[in-house]
Each structure stands twice: as structure tokens, then as C-alpha cells.
Picture 1 (cartoon, rainbow, N blue to C red):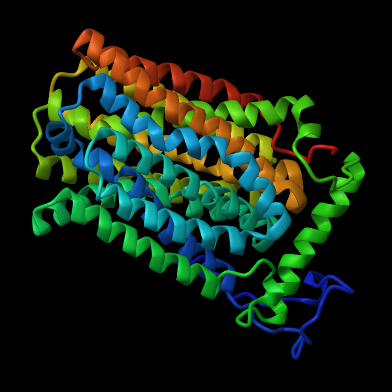
Picture 2 (tube, one colour):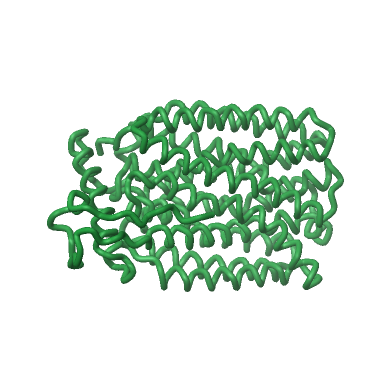
Length: 452
């Protein structure tokens, strides 16, 4: 993936009077590209995040046998992470708005690395369950902090790409995780060591975040005057638009609860994650049990399926920004792209339920992930609806809703598979989630900040 071309020149009308702290040495100075490098770092971070949370799914056939777990207990174990992850979203969003994303994101990395390593030392269901709860608590700050950084660092015309670069780490990590965790298990001869190594990598990522990320572009030594003024000009324009619609910049979540777009944002993300987390947690076991794949084939199939999601997400963000730059309204762009995404996801999942061939099922699931991940554009919505002031808490509320699906879906799928001995109704559950997503993305108003 190439960094978008940011080496254009900054003219005098891009600067925001009174905001500059770094002296401009040249009115035609070429903009630095720190914001794009920062988001590439976040892409790597979220990829590691996804590898860690999905590692249990790849190792699950071995863990299930070692711990002698029934399908219902498997569903409970898979859901444990999402319980605490969801519950922490709004509190951690508030902390991000108050203390800044850099501190919260760094603390998250250090904590979740330790918890991931601890899960490799679990002696049975209970200790593994507790470790997964710990991973949920500590990972909670990463995505809301990323949404806040999107609001702080990205120009309005670049937020679609910023959002999808950030969120694309989830399918990339899920795809690579299948290969990496399977490879570590094969190399070390133990699923436990694979978790310890993944945890150590996460701690290193936390140190990288503290070293490179800043809460304000002007605090970063690599940002020149042209880049800082370019970002600030966009912020000033957004603040002026917000004044027109009556936004007062108040902090907090409660004032947003009366708006339809807030609930559409939350329900859209809930439906999206009903599909994504269902495939992330149960997908490897589905391929093993319903399609007869061995561990190596599961790893490569997971890479293909979730790799398609990564490619689709980057393409979706690029198309959205370019279409918006041509003059199209945010509502036209987002409703069209996300409406198409929802329709293809529904059709693809229905297809998976009726095709017996394993290869065709992998192809259809790859198509589903390619279009599903367009909904990663939702990580631009906290900034659209709440501006820089409340992007953290709105991102937390959105992710709370999404991760309700995270802890409900693995349990429901476990109950369905345990009761029916088949994955058909589980796949239809994913179809229902995609329908909720589709209705929500067509309801949300993407054009303006909410008057809070």
C-alpha cells in the first residue's frame, strides 16, 4: 500500500491565522507527511491487536481438545474478551477526550501484551477465561483513540482514508494471524509459546506508539508549518460549520442520545460486528468442522478471506475520499458505498449457506469480507458527528455497540451449533446482522455535525 500523495504545496489560503506556533520559512513549503506515517503505524498496531484477539480462534481446535470443551463452553470462551472490551468503551472514550489518545493507547498496548502472554500460561477453562477478560479490558482504548487521532490529525478530505487505514488492521491482522499463529505453533510445538511471543510483540508496539504518536500535530517534531497549517485550516472550517448548525462543543455522551444519527451509527456498527466477529471467532472452527480443513489449510484460507477484507477496506476509503473530493455530498458517497456493501454481504452469506464446495465457500467469504470492510469508513463518523471535542467518547459508544455483538455472537453461534450440529443457522444469524447494518447505513446523516 502506498502513502497518498501529500507532497503538494501549501498556499497562503490554507493557513489559519493566529494558530501557527512554528514559523513558516516559505509560503510554498512542501507539506510533510507525518499524519500518513502515523496512521501507517496505527495500521500495524491494529493488525497486532487483531492477531492477539484472534489467536485463540486459530489455536482453538487444539485448545478445545486439550481442555475438553463442549461447543457451549467454546462460545463462552470466545465471548469473554468482548464482555470487558465492550464495557470499557465509553469510560475509555472519556479518558481519551480528557487525557489524550497517546497516553491511553500506550497504556493499552502494555497491558494487553501482558494479558496475552498470561493467556499462554492458562491451565484450563477458568484461567483462560480470566486472561481473555483481561485482554478485553486492556485493548479497549485502541480503536477509540484511533478515531480521536483521525479527528485531530487528518484533513476533512482525508478522513475516509484515515479511518480505513486505521480499521484495515483488523482484517489484515486476522488474515496474517492465521499464518503467524499457526506458524508459531508449528515452530515452537506449543500454542502457549505462540501467545507469549504475540504478547511480547504488543509491548514493543506500545513503546513505538509512545515514541511517535502525539496528541497535537504541532507537538510532533517531524510536522512542518505547511502540514500543521493545512490540518488547522480544515479544523477551523469545520468549527465554523458547526457554529452554523448550533454545535456548542460540550463534552459528554448524554446529549447525543436524542439524535437518530447517533443510534444509526451504533446499530450500524453492531450489525457490522455481528458478521465480522462471528467470522473471526468461529470461522476457523467452521472451516475445520464443516469443510474438513487441517490447521495449515485453515491458516492459508484465513489469510485469503481476511486479506480480501484488508484490500477492500483500503479501496473503499480511497474511493470515498476521491468521490467526495469531486464535489459529491457525504450522504451520497457514504449511503451509496455502504448500501452496496450491505447488499453484497447479505447475498454472499446466503450463498455460503447453500454451496457444499469448500473452495467456493472460501471464495464467497472472501467476497463478503472485501465489501464488509468498506464499513470501516464508520471510524470517520465520530469526528463527523462530534468533532474533535467528543470524537473519543462517540468512538467509544460506537465501539460499545459493536462489541455487544462481540460477546453475544460467539455465545449464540455456540448454542446454535451445539443444538443443531450444523453451521447453517449460524450463517443465517450473520445475514440478519448484515440486514441491521444495511438499514443503519442508509439512515445515518453524514452531512453535518450534531448540534451538541
